[in-house]
Length: 500
Image: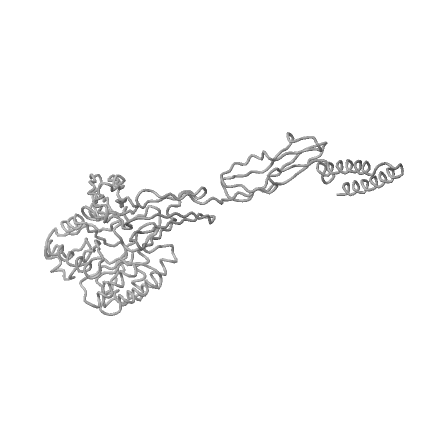
């Protein structure tokens, strides 16, 4: 900064002396001013090319602080270096990295060597996204939105429909990317189709096949309210069912109408090694430890089931209730079970062994009766059952020898999954049914890590001790790394060995 000040002082002194010189010799003042102007021009040139007294300048044609749109290449071609009138850009070096595909601020340090010295200058480059997404309107009511930075953001498009006075509709679309850039579009249509095709399965929503058998997918149907039968447009992942590996496979069927509405329905395919006990099915694929709380014989007439529901709600845990025939108060309880996200399953219409196991048809008809009653009363369609006494019960053979072998196969063929247990709370025994401590100890001692733990409990009137033990059971599970899940049609089957 000192050199420019000295130059200005010298310039002022020289200009004054020249003025005196010209005046003394009576030269024209215009000639004096011309000489002074030339000196001033030389001074300006010095200021332009010799800043800060160092004699070297790094120039940025597009500005030292630069803003770039994302995905715009940065070459640094506008950066030059000079020493006075001499270009020395060929000695210019740049350090630092910039990724113009990622938003953010980057610093590039430029350096130039001259006369044994190195001169530095930093350039800050900000990569931004100021480009709105590309919103395309396609045939029917389909649309797409592609952003230059976020990619496909079609799922973020907000659609509103306004009915016009002439009976047509104005459909408006708006989408905003992660940087706040918004694109809008609109179109007029005579009719709006916002209904997805209705999907129905051919056959049962659950399919059970044995290991190594051939899986013949029964498919589904699709009916659209405006376009009619769209069954031919259904796609599915049925080819992913591996009948050489036991497990549960979810087959998803989808159909899309011309307005972009997608209908979907699923079927769960269980591949079993055999009908009966298979310890491998209880193991979880990811090593997680799962508890399935199950309650038989309810809903209770007193407050046992209600107490259990209150406890489950308190801890945010879902369970499975295998219910028997119920009255008006029982229906209220079952509706609460459904509303709070629990699984309602079928135990039997009557728990009288003589009646429910009187014949193959008697049990089957009892299950159908319960299924239809629950569906009619609540709209809830369940296909999960538990045999009274479990599939290993020794009671049914007193009435019909070999009954359970036939019943288990028949229920699976009809699309019903039966679930036994691998942890017994023993709350059904005379010894422990009133002993909450014993129930708790039997449950926690029966738990195993890395598998599905199906816990047998009951919620009839006499099982208040079970309701007493339930909070401690849940707390133990949560404290020891277990997760709680209700049984669904995608849960691996837990079955005992048949005892006819």
